[in-house]
Image (cartoon, rainbow, N blue to C red; front, side, top):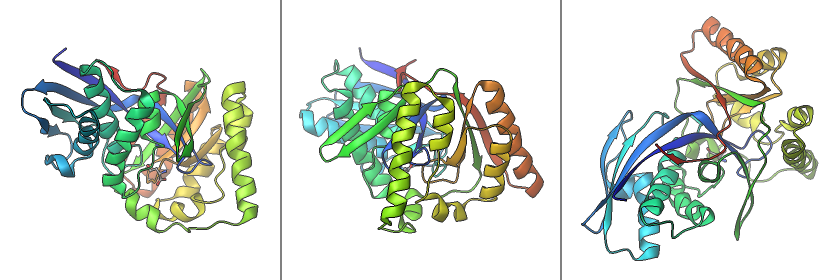
Length: 306
Ligand code: HSE
């Protein structure tokens, strides 16, 4: 195989209670990438459409992640990448993760899969470090594994694929402002109280159990964030109004997608997810905030060839 065209899903990191450890991949939002073998050693980003991002390999998340893999393998050939961005940078649905994970997944396919998904997460995290200053894995892991994932440990890296209940749908609204992950991490406190810790890890355990038991009420009860949401929600227009409206419309739970500004809800069934979308839109239409809105199933396979 000389070239491969792939779909790289958008992702929702944190999923309310699991800051930096939980994530899920979305089925109907994502970028496309074309990755081609070349004779020249190294990696070139030859074209990016849809977003104004650097082509220079060392300043591009796909470039940095891909080079991490090639360096590890000591590969003598090279690759060229074209990226068609549909996920906006700074949207909170894993724009940099899609590019970083896509680059390493595609290169790994063209090389005959020398690396495991866990290895690919490590390489892709180098791209995330370039984008946000922190090598978090909660977007790249679901992009590469598909479905819901838990980063049980960063050192050593341990990623656990979780169950995806079949009736679960996500609704995501992206108010058209850009929030850089690096900025929205700077405003967080670096310590938490034991009391908040107890509430938070109770919810992480509840969410994991709810996913495996396919217990939608338990999933909903667990989608609560006592630590990050109270701080970051200040960056998002009408956050509490949107949240309240989605819960009244039947969402299981609502939170900040990744580092924001997108807001996500999980619902049981597509019909409910669409009702939730309408509730979100009504609020932003009323106050005049421009937005993109998506209703999507969970993507269970992660990145795939087109
Ligand atoms: N866990 C990361 C954060 C995700 O919340 O900063 C960024 O998409």
